[in-house]
Image (cartoon, rainbow over all chains, first blue to last red; front, side):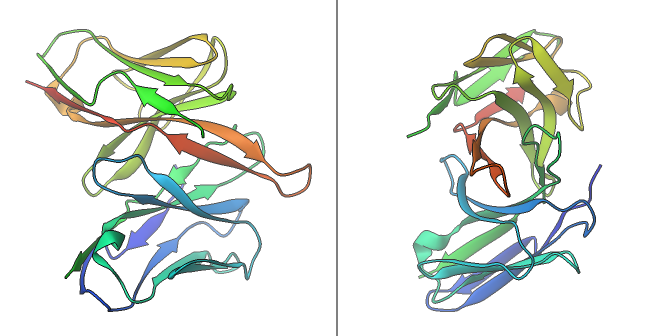
Length: 114
Length: 118
């Protein structure tokens, strides 16, 4: 079983704070790294897919970076808003004949207080 | 829009009951997955299927079986439910994006079924 770790497990911030969390994954057999956002009572939805070392992706106030050589990705949220409250999941994709199988981290639960 | 639906949002069953969780996707995806999510453990893969009647065990298949008789439907079966199978169950299907070079599979999730076994 692949080891994908996320930290911290949970985070409480005030509205307007910027925050970041980490996903670490095996640096060998890397194909892609996915970030998902999972809001309460909804389905997890894809935020980013990153495939190349040094990739940086941005969507509004959320951005992500990727370092495949050392096996980590950071997710940043600038100026957090209460609607950013969710569980953020990263998932490692080893590619090959894995049929799209992903290995997920434990998730980071973000709570943004007004 | 891709749509993945699950038969129930909440389900309460008794120990020893046979439980069926149904998942349907409407986008003709080849691959489908069943996960369970428990606090502090993230999503753990139970089983997946890459074609009709084809299935493979994931990381935690014990106590579960699956059925894929039609491409759009993937069922998770708890033959004899136990209290340690109380969990949130998520179904997903995946689609390949991109060309021959450096494409990727993206998974699309259903809303989840929260199963309680008493």
